[in-house]
Length: 424
Image 1 (spheres, rainbow, N blue to C red):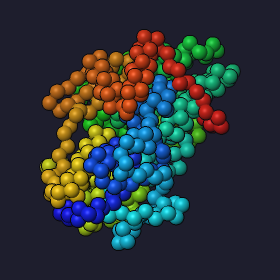
Image 2 (image 1 turned 180 degrees about the vertical axis):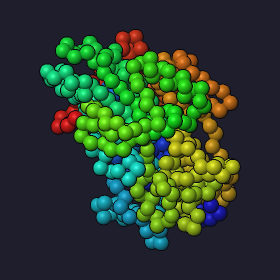
Image 3 (image 1 turned 135 degrees about the vertical axis):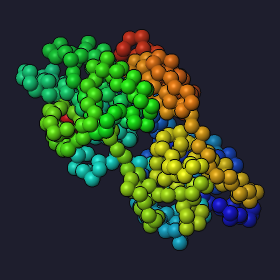
Image 4 (image 1 turned 90 degrees about the vertical axis):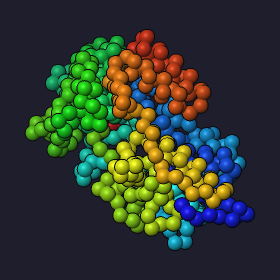
């Protein structure tokens, strides 16, 4: 990032991806009055940490999404474009959209995140949807509710048991949060909605290939999470690698498990957009960047978030967390603004760990700050406060806070909608 620019000619920055990283870059440059174009295939920014609550009918999609134009509309120098990038020409300095439109750039920032990774078994995606977008959350919510509807209409006890067996594959934070939330939905909310079946007897499985769940957390917090999941009625199976997924069944750990719904939370792979740069990637599709978040050998091209393999001060790769992406975006946006305006050379990016968390269920969570660990009600309350604060816009914060309080007091969930033309 040593290049400086003539103050009379402000370089055009193009940011691809309006996730946590991309929004922060555009916001910082917009505040500095510098020209920036942000491109995304969706018109909204999504607060992904709460996506599982949409999938389990606790929140509505609009509670965790905000229009990109609304977020950045106050900055006159920011242009928002709706479109999908299909080509990147690093020599001609332009990106091409699916419509054929070319968008020129002086500085390019790729922050397109990650997608579901099925470890080479993409055919599994039709039977076990993952959770990365609002569309994914709606699909899972509809299939989840539809399994109970079908069980209610079935007169076959064996088929009822199959339909009310929900398997979550992957014991990381997303899998743990999904399993706990599904168990609470069945036990406390749906139990009052049906008469022929007893949803509280539903089988919720959490399948993990490794020796324990929450491998990124200390063992005592992972053990606490597993105990709490068991209390909710979740059956945790470790050392249980999935071998095959088919319609209505999963083969895992050498056993065929009949299931009404399987949900994939076992792995992700970086956005395929990174391959358009023509540089080497790791097995997960991530691009190696330096401590300034730039791609070695490519002038003024930066990669952030889940698409980047970013080293910390010790050379170890940073985890794919929302807080990492958000901090990278803020860092790069301010660094670019200082460089363009004053020619200032940036210091290396340093990640400040704000803690790693996972929600198990009603007033139960784990929080790991490295030097400080929390579990139970206090961890849950701390998590709730932080996530309400991080939501974009006062209206979202207020509505989510009210809904969480209502759920806490009544166990009620108001977003139990089945979309049309959804197959379970």
